[in-house]
Length: 322
Image 1 (cartoon, rainbow, N blue to C red):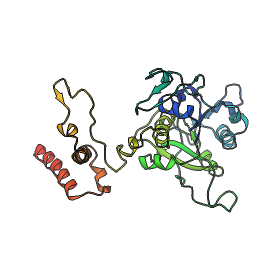
Image 2 (cartoon, helix red, strand yellow):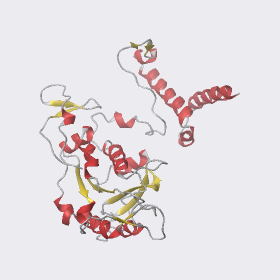
Image 3 (cartoon, rainbow, N blue to C red):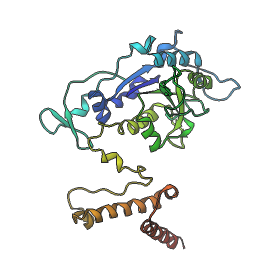
Image 4 (tube, rainbow, N blue to C red):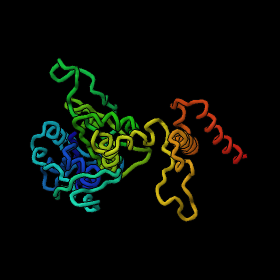
């Protein structure tokens, strides 16, 4: 997968070089290029925004800069062709488990190689508009393949469709993702509309709140997507058992020691009975979801036992409120 990010703060994307994402770069699983939007601004002040038509607070990012930037990123021409891909960070390799290997949060190891250099909201930094289709269906550019090979342009914005685990899974199969990081009051809507000529466009929101700019949202989305690409996580079950993978929140996890500050690991996890452990984990997942996100249960296929567990939670809440 290739990821391109267009932003006025390239250094903000430096975390993409670290940890599992850095290891994915190191292994050649993904390529990341961060482009400074001001490279396409040619006035003395390298201006990227102007006051909004119709009045109102703030500034709007101008189409005369964003348009050429997205043109070049799509074709990898102009300043976009001059942006060097990010190299994996050295910092994430320092916690090594032995000579020539490193460990990440998933417990996997990988080879140590030298890597250095490279830089890199859902804010109102993008205009709202029609959310484009993110599928690979449709007529191909050559009119024969039935596959649309244009890059997928992702515009983080509070006005976008909710970004979910299903979205992350769908995007993890893409060959190219391009992110447009807006700032201020957003990007001129004509940029998004015009980009549909060269991209498949999706406007997304990572939550019902407003950030200063799109860069933070890109980091969130990139982590959620990249970890689902085969080979990034060492243990495939790491993401198959995540929260939301089956529509439920993930239950609690425990590790050594067996007792800590008077708190013991549940006996069932020490029983060696895998069927009992699986049932306990399912029950804990149901309980946590019923307590924290009951709205998710409407879309989950529930057994009679599942419903019994959930009813127990609902009953306790009802008694507490009486």
